[in-house]
Image (cartoon, rainbow, N blue to C red; front, side):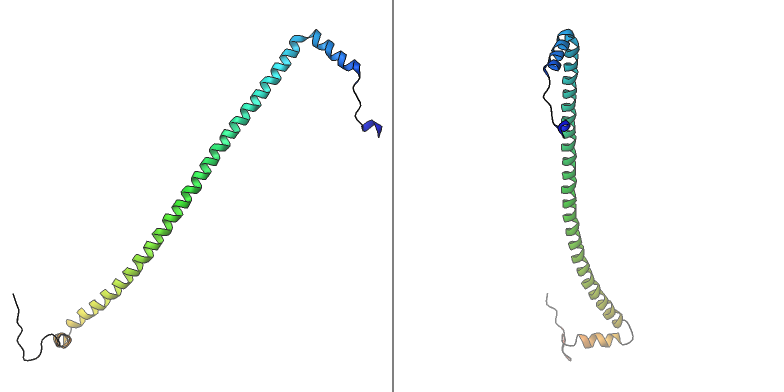
Length: 132
């Protein structure tokens, strides 16, 4: 159990490190320089990653807004289409009744049917007067 506990460092290792620093100062400068460059590179990568993430979020939000607008416009078109279909059905029904009436007028006895339909306009034994 005692082997798992942290042990304080001895003074000899710290003096050995000091000696290495004093013997090879240019090596330590290169190491610190390399670590500094590595940190700068990591920061640069993080910044570029954040920039890419921001751009992607912007594009996704743009797509979502566009889809919402398109769905609203599509719903409006469907509503207008429904209204037009209803009006078309009414007009088609009216056209069918008028076509049937027209066809009845040009069959046998159509003139009599026409006079029967319009007998309320001109009374029998009356003259029609046209005013100018």
